[in-house]
Length: 219
Image (cartoon, rainbow, N blue to C red; front, side, top):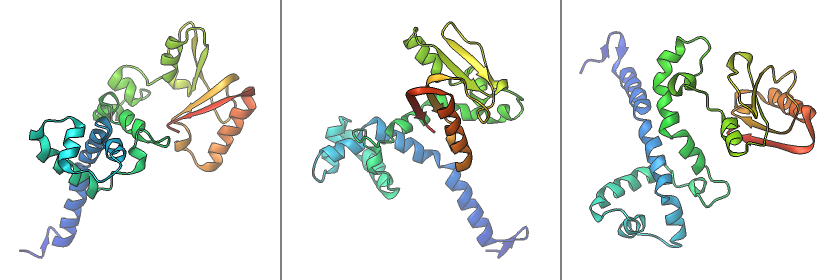
């Protein structure tokens, strides 16, 4: 075998290919995580209260016995990657299973196939392009509670059409926040350094009516 190709040694080429394949097939990890949560595998193993055999697990999962080979392969793969953590137990108060279900929902995950189109769009978000609308939690809340008045506060260029009890307001959260009884922060704090998060939370406290509530969602 040649010791180099196009000026690169074989070891460098192999490492580059390995890194590429690792990321190329990373979706398999995500899909296996999704399967664990959908089938409640972690909970069923935990609730068994003792070591569980593969045939017993197949029986508990209520899958056909002909699938025992596939279940065995899945279990080996999951164990190898250390996916059986208590954070996947749906019965655990610290469970991240809902996060797995949310992120790996096809409505959300399929949106990332539109990244190329999103790059060339000036003001549209990825979900504007893929879904035709933003992922606005307030719309669901307002539909469920028509007597509740909600304000969606975002950057000016991302505001959209409201309704009878839903208003979209553009502004800068580092300057001021619309006064409210309760504030829900959705996908906000993860984007900022600690000092910025402190500023955001202080503004929430300043502009929130006394003795009310502050909520976080996928912060």
